[in-house]
Image (cartoon, rainbow, N blue to C red):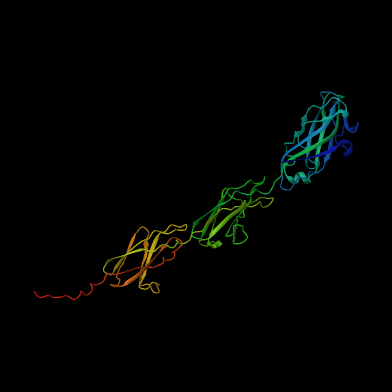
Length: 379
């Protein structure tokens, strides 16, 4: 909040007496008038334009005057014009506490609020229009003298600044290749927020890898946004988030470091190998190992693959997707007495993770071997 005031002095600036029936005359460097039954004198002072910083909001317009009177019943009326005297506000009667003395002993009155249409309500009116005050010696016994030395206008305004930096946005992975942010609006700096910018980045200092979204209109509170694959979000990547807000003065600063961060969803991690048990002719039972880390998206299935070669150059079979709640799978139609290697992988909404090492193996059942030679003894 700042206060600006402009003064106009009677002897220095000159007073215009606009009432045809009377004439204000200098007296000890101030204007004076003797009240009669038929008229009173109007004194006008041209006030300099106020200089108020751009973006400020006018809160209050006030006026006061330096005056004296010859008796306690004499008083003044006060008017204000923002258009060089073309129009005036309704007169405000101020009986006041003027000293009963000549102008040499005058004192400032208290401020009178200009709460009317002719007080400047905008920055443009205060800075560019002709501001005038009119003071009228209008009340008092015939022959009373009112003295007026100076008038002063005061405009109180709030200086508008750019918005404050917001609190750190929250950031989270909410779908495949999607990062969602949310943040509350900051202090608006005295002016309406009209835009918001949110950035996510693979850099904790935002020097590279930035993805920027600007709303282009007034923000909601809180403001949320989803960054997706169309914006460049990729799987399994750590992203940082920051935001800033805009009003008519300009852009405010970003939230302060350290920035919140989160990792986008990724495929499940690699698991250990399964457990194998031959349990029927041409069949090996595969027991699912413990599920690996899901990396943000719940695991939905597991998948078994087998081959006679530990390198799995051309797998001989697979299970297809097995729902995660099923703990075993029977690989069937296997050759009798053959060795098979098995490995597994897990699946979530992003896709399949990598296969396990595939070092475990088992041999299917086979026919009995040839019995040893029998020895026959005579009795």
